[in-house]
Length: 162
Image (cartoon, rainbow, N blue to C red):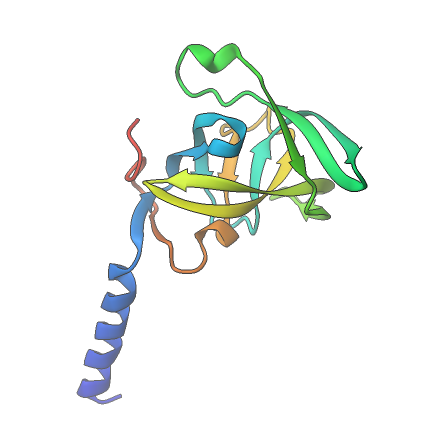
């Protein structure tokens, strides 16, 4: 490879980096459609789809359209930690998701707006019981796509205050 090509590649990489926000391996997100102002999420580049800890997941029919009701306890670090938020959303899909331990589970998939560091966008989220996990939410690769973010693997809360 010649020197001018190296400079071209370096300039291309720097251009890509400048267009992305740097986030930590964990961040506080907002899910405004559900009235959730803060939920701690693990940024997981190994997970394709984002996942939300949901309880009492119940499918229902809403004028011929599949919907799901569920409860979320976002543990935002405040007084609302004990409160469960009642949520409802149209079902986008139902998928078999394989966990990091290799177990498959059928999950409902919804689409919801998310806010991270002042950026607003829609993501797909699977609903699952994450009670035994350290984070109420995983922020997966598809949420990171389209050049939104770069992940710093040793830093936390770069776009959101603790």
